[in-house]
Image (tube, rainbow, N blue to C red; front, side, top):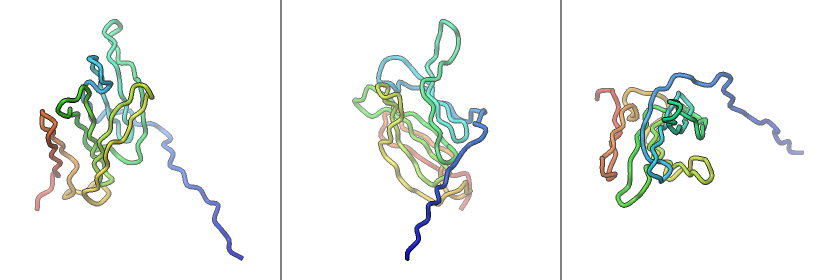
Length: 144
């Protein structure tokens, strides 16, 4: 008689990250209003500035399974909204968009470029984007 495992595994962050490590500015909702996207360790949050109160209002927050190492905004030619590129410790680069009608982030593309973990020779620490949205550059701090 075959037995099957009924084990389930969960990843639970007991205390959410508080220090903001990366921040980008852009028109992520597709309107002329600007939003701010912040990365705090394993948490990605989009904020709307409120000039009347002088505060940032969080619109949506998403926990990610990993550590966000780099963050950049870019706009495709002919588009009316900005997209977000995320470099993480998983050895992958992700392009996402904010969908205001559903109030969530939507993954556009996911590309694996290296091994997981924060390694010196694996790219991911520094991310640069062409202002016209044609290319991005992802490099490491290590030497060959």
